[in-house]
Length: 255
Image (cartoon, rainbow, N blue to C red; front, side, top):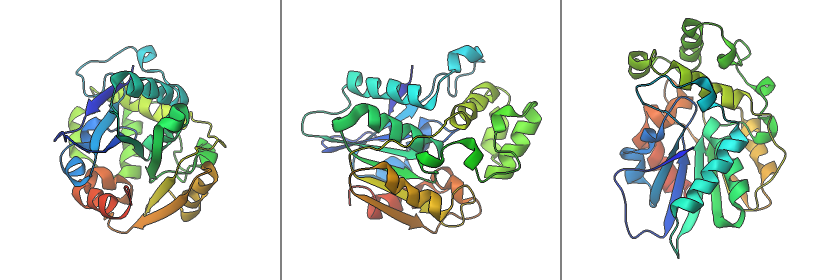
């Protein structure tokens, strides 16, 4: 079952709720601190089972598809009572989290007021054959852990924090990527406003991939671009949380 976590510092007396979906390999904690402080909403974030727990669960307990996991999150949002009377619900996902946010919005229907996605191919391009990494488009299929981490760092850059816990978290990490790499994509639409955010010089997406999110809503669509990604633009949410969140808060969210 998905874990729905209140982002810190917790906020009160807001009229908006933002549920956030982290990228593959990340946890709800990437939305704590600078991100939450910058956003004018009560924030919740989604964790997959066993994230950051010092255990090696059976692989079967981690097996989810993007669609099934998104539907489970939708159920949790309703059951958890995240949204109070008078509050509006918005969803935001980064990278692979964008697809989960999109599928969750489909499951929630009219309960959602808007969807924001960043650094992700449009669902119609969701199949792994459309991945920009032609060398190792499927990290989850690499045979050894060393090969997995080498490909991960080539694609996303070196993370000292992840290297410290790489052994204990290899199973959920691989499963994160198996989930996203097994997504077959979708031609479906949501019926609420959708904003797609691209990051300049991000090798994981192209302008076409961001623009084609327009095919996935019957509501208003717009795209925004950020040019402050630094050496590893795709990791902006984690590498530059304050700068990226400030951009989202000032120029994207609820504008």
